[in-house]
Image 1 (cartoon, rainbow, N blue to C red):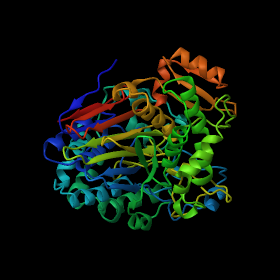
Image 2 (cartoon, one colour; image 1 turned 135 degrees about the vertical axis):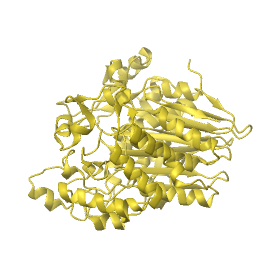
Image 3 (cartoon, rainbow, N blue to C red; image 1 turned 180 degrees about the vertical axis):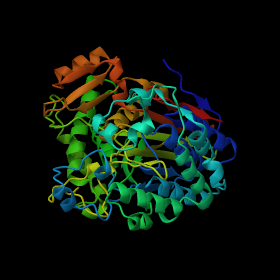
Length: 532
């Protein structure tokens, strides 16, 4: 039974040790949780390039010590030249996942850092930007070791990724993934971060860095124009929430799929007589996930394309109706025509005053579009791959619109005063992982380390089949497997080498009585938790 690290006043959790060390350093220097998170986000953008970067997006949940919760949406819109006609004229039936045509949405993460620091300043934060970006600059300039995850992670369309001009020279060794421990230096990225530290984060969009980014995007044929960068700003949004028996859980509104996570927890919370960690409880989570994903795919899109208020699906009456449609005796059919891809980092921080952050940052698929912009060293994401080229789709490609977004950091406030920051990587599968780790902690009474380390399941596609299969991580409880099979779930046991497919999750909880913080990050990742 793993022990959960406990810290006296404050803690951070990250999937890479260097990012966790950065966060701990900022907390020790008197920084608050937001400042620690910006510094961690910069560091991990350098040392975990297959999962995230400054050429990607981010979403924030921030809870003030007195209880107010802020949502920050740092997702980027499609470029002004990104039209359905453009892609149809090029012969595409869908947006390609790699190359310049995949680099079609503005990268919002850096603007999100700036918006978060505005909030931090209003709450008393005062650390300078050059200190917050210092570790990231040093790792980019002096070098960092390639992680275990980067060497081993498997992603879709990998051959196409390696053919993107400039990618192989930057990330491969003799045509293969760089071995774990290989020292990599990224001096152009170091220069870019140094410029941002001195000129301010807005320079990424409206300054010298933005000019170089725009020129490189134009040279490679991306549909993003300089005016798209200049116009972009991250947004403050109202979080969604769902009331459970002993807690309230929060997540982000569309275009985030945060609605799906809240729907799963809300539906299962309305089912009576369930005992946690039984086949029936997992069956309920699985069936709720199917219903939540079906609703997500019909509803979630750019906020301007919404037909319904997302909060209307989270009322007690709406959740009761959805829960009543779950068959607790037999698994429902769930078509899933393609395997799910998408890679991300989630990180959390809680400081001595109780300021709590749940943050997620991503380039979508591993290494995003694969387009490394030569002047700045920025690797551009492929989040726009989630758009549809179908004019009838609510998630259709339109210049200035945001695609359905898999990123959804979570936070929970318990009736006894505990504050829980939690999240996971895993693309579209994130709500499944979040529902499992939250239920294990909140319902089954597991410690954080047990809740995160326990084997997980996910609904995924098998090549050549339309019907989803329930993939379970080794060593999943044989009794649960047997019980789920009896309930009609198509279970496929995965070997240990596949475990990276089951996400990197993390959790931190602040206890009101003594101010201590429990914190853990996934042993499946390359990180952990550190604190004061």
